[in-house]
Length: 58
Image (cartoon, helix red, strand yellow):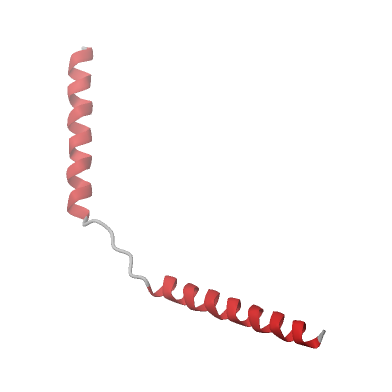
């Protein structure tokens, strides 16, 4: 009976350790974003398309 309890506790400790290691690695990951210049360029393209749409409606 005690052997089963010890094995269960060891399994819980191993799973807890693995989850803590995985979470720690996830927080260390460096995310990147696109530069702001690309965002401004795409925004001006959207405005250009809107302006063309307005001209056709008149």
